Structures are given as C-alpha cells and as structure tokens.
Image (cartoon, rainbow, N blue to C red; front, top):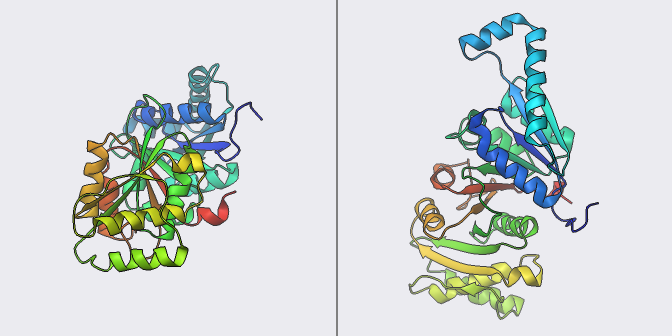
Length: 315
C-alpha cells in the first residue's frame, strides 16, 4: 500500500474510451484520479463493428489487422502513461458497449467507472441515450461522467437532496471519495411544501438534535428556516467524519429541480455534482422519468452517478 493512501478511496478505476481525441477529457480526469488515489486504472475500449468504410476494410482484413490496431493502441497507451506512478491496463472487448462495461467492471472489481459525455465521445451516449437505464440499474459502482477539462482536483461538489436514503448515499459517497472538497447540500422545494415545517419539527423532536454544524444559507420564503433545519437533520443522519461536516454548506431554492440545479452549479463554480439513482418517486429518480433525465442533461459540470445498489456492493 502506498504511503498516504486512504483505504476508503477506490483502488481500481475503469475508464471506457474509444482511444480517440474525443475521449481526452475523461482520460485526463482518470489519470488525475488514479494518481490522487494511487489506484490501478483499466482502459476499456469496445469494438462494436465497422462504422465507416475504412473500418469495413479493416474488418474484412480479419484478425491480422485487428492485432496490428491493438498493438498500436498498447504502444500509444504505454507512451501516454510512461512514469505515471500507478498501474495501467488496456482491455479490449467486442459487442454491445453497455454489456462490455458491465462485464469489465465486474471482472476487474473496479470501484469507479469513468466515461465521457455524449457531446465529447460516442461511448458517453450510453449514459444519455437508450441503454443508460440498463447500465445504471445493473452497475453497482458509481459512474463518473466527465464533461470538463481537468485543471485541478474537484474542490466544490454539489449534492442535490430530497432527503431520501439515496440522497444520503450520494452525500456519503462524495464525502468518502473527496474528503478535502467543499460539499454543498442543495435542496429545491416546489410549490406545495407547506408540510415541511411540521416535518422538520417532528424530526427534530424525535432525534433530539439541535442541527449539524454545517453552514450556509437558504433562500427566502416562509419555510426558509424549516428547510434549513430539515437539511441539517439530513446531514445529521449521514455517516460523516467531523472534519468533513465542517466543510458542508447548505443552500436551497424554490422552483423546478431540473432548471435550478443546473443554474446553481453554473453560477457557483461547481466542479462536480453527485446524483443518486433509485426506483422510487422523487427529485432524483434519474432515468426513470423526464425530470431526472433533464437534471442530468442540464448539468454542464462533471457528474457522479451513485446507484443505491452500491450500498450493498461496496466496502
């Protein structure tokens, strides 16, 4: 084990890439995280079959051409990661992209899967297209969708919450992976939240808690104090180290989650948003209804997707 390694952070990462320039952004983030965590990085590239005339010619040439392409890819990866200081593997697969990622993640025991946005590379389309539901439901590991260039470690992380268990898992995962970053717990409340104040008071009486030490503000409104208290109770219910709790800020706004979450991330310089996946009704019921999908699509920052199944499959 490397000196300074945190046992709570991933030891094995999986990057889905087509090895082209379109995947440069997720590649750079994967390199940075592997170096930060002293983790093993596996690069997975999936050969779906010929897509353009040049690829058809190569396909007709048979295994010899494929072997040459694989050799060239391994040579380029060796150059890319020369002196990286962490182990790197290159893995090839054929067939369906989603199936290949699921199989590779299981085979390699990867603890984080990294992909690009559909606007950056074709592999990213599985997370914003028709096969995302299959991957999101079946993959227990968190999935990091990279959109931005890697300039520094993640410093400001947004965790939208609807106070559900999956939101709790998202916050705990963000704290575990990035313990030095500032975490922002953000709640969007819509019209019809009049019962929130009673919920907050009853929850406070039941727990006997005076609220967490988290700091921040809640945008105005009749229920502003109740919302802030509810956010504090939500944080109190999470398993967080004291030093992490001290870096948590609270904020809230009234409106539609899909609009305000993206706007908040943009206006407040958020580096990463952490969203939970679940089947139940709620703000972050990602990929199960149009609202959740719009939250993801509207974000311009990197996004970490945490599946509720990871609670049982993780350490």
